[in-house]
Length: 240
Ligand code: FPP
Image (tube, rainbow, N blue to C red; front, side, top):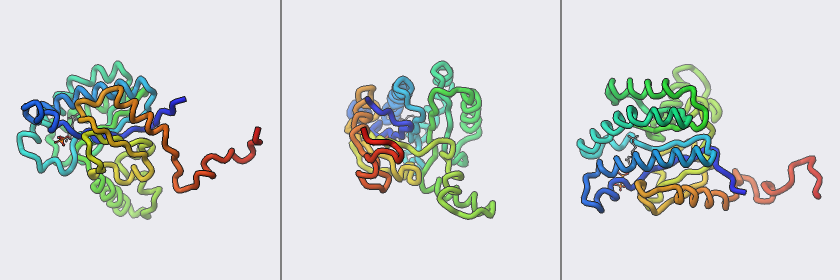
């Protein structure tokens, strides 16, 4: 029986190379990236994944050429208007995760509106990390606790992190044939299984998702324990 990960996180890498190979502007690659994301959301919901978290714009992406940054902002604004009706039909609840400072008032209002419109949906939680960085997340959580005079512990940090509303990712996928975390969920991926796909993000389809889930099913998640401890019958259960 295939075990479906509860929470999948994805670094959607390779849009730029996909466009370059076709002599298209990089923004065209990001547009196809949105199509791929739409397909992936649907496929995750169909397979029973409860949470999908994607890296759409990192704290470091501001350093890209100005036309690419503005293209990504426009794409986000467009996706908000175009995609929300279908997300409603599919029962997807949207959360935007990241620093709102630096985003225009119009974009911020759009994010808040999309979150409010989908807040009653329960089939799949879609976290879109936008203007997000793992180091920013750890620092903002520590600063929040410090300013409230709360002790900094692992559990208080868990509660203060930007993804406090969901459990940690079980599976982290990175597309684009690169093997890096790139400042994505640094705190939350402590025990996630990693899967690196050679496909560029616009080419990441249902079969590629199933390949990642199949690889996840081959892993033994030990969380620091031994293999024997993981496979031993639960206390109180008699061996057959
Ligand atoms: C990395 O590929 C991808 C990004 C920086 C943007 C990801 C965005 C999307 C998939 C579109 C969804 C976005 C919104 C706005 C909802 P890259 O450009 O670094 O690719 P490369 O490594 O081939 O250059």
